[in-house]
Length: 360
Ligand code: ACM
Image 1: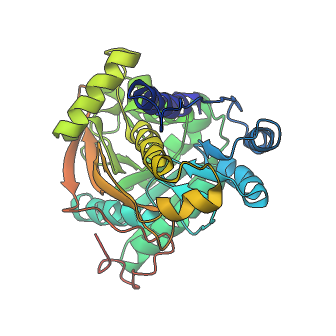
Image 2: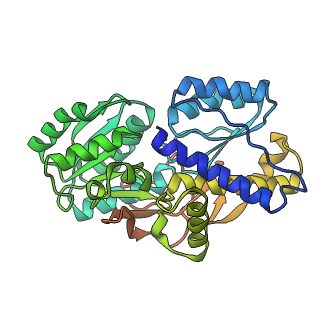
Image 3: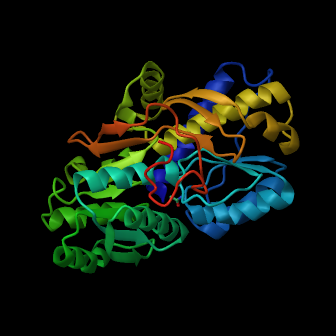
């Protein structure tokens, strides 16, 4: 997961550096303690425990995969810590000890499904990495698709460490079935192998794109712009969305990490959540979860994606919904976006059987 996890670390550190450069919090410097679990979910749980028990840390920022979050969840619940989780995920979870700042399915999957059905057709092929996020995310996508008259024509899961050759049978399957859309929940380095195998097969994204919730500017950079061009992702944030707040964020990120390093939705969430935390800490002047948490809930922030808030009903952020297509410079051109932030609804309570009448 290094391709994307590293960018979350960078977003986190950029925010910490900005806060310290502005004088810290109530005159005190923020000092990050960093462990690298090397993408092993169980190690996330072990390090979380070490942070809380040995290092006396009460607030943790991180986790990309849902399996790593699920390893940290019991630790922060038992020891009453606060985990800030900056990644899109499958929803259907609530912990009083987690602040969720990435998109839930009602903020990405629902709009993406509708867009793809309208523009490409109703026959979807699912390909994913084999763990909780892809299987659960596909359960929701299947429901939305079927309730709107679409069908899943194929579904396959590959090991998280899948290499190029592992995608060959998938590509053969796709050649035979000819779906309208390939919905990918492949994550991390394997993403590069899926998109490159697609390109090698000579498929055309204009007629059968790969659509995803996880393929960001970072993965597109890793696979090559020519390989990513024409494919589609739904996310709250893309580097190219414009706006003054975002332009200055992108400029600062590039100044810190290099001109060729793009921002992405995971950098942005990792970045703004530290600022939300800092603002709250400034008011509470206490790291106690019981004191911090009520102040975090309901707070708002002018993030690079636009104004966001932490929804007090569910500890998930109200975020923007955007659908973008990769251009030849490796950037996403926005095809569609919400008019305002979409309220977080991690249990899809506001969505009826048709799934088209809900928020957003
Ligand atoms: C994910 O595992 N939530 C991308």
